[in-house]
Image 1 (spheres, helix red, strand yellow):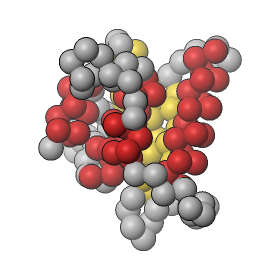
Image 2 (cartoon, rainbow, N blue to C red):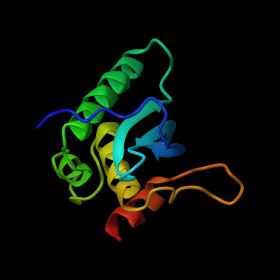
Image 3 (tube, helix red, strand yellow):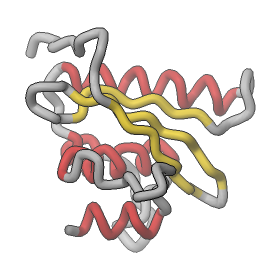
Image 4 (cartoon, one colour):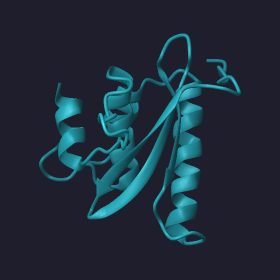
Length: 129
């Protein structure tokens, strides 16, 4: 499939994702017309660390897959899981799960105070619904 680029100005939301007791700031960009997820950026690892580089590359790969038409649910279902079959084995799997939630409920993670947040429990509940 051909890549569908996002416009330079697009809606997005930044949420906090807690994975293995580490907080990550995740920004999800949306296609304005469709409201579907088109990109993801993540920060939270120490700047310049190997994990920082892995997260940057993983987000580029996830974003490119989304822009080439891969559905978030297909990404999430392809990720490794712990023995319970639901808990993501890595931060990349947790990001894919979050993209599924974001695609179903754009703006779902906004709290009235304006500070967006999502915990592993919130993410699991959103994915299950």
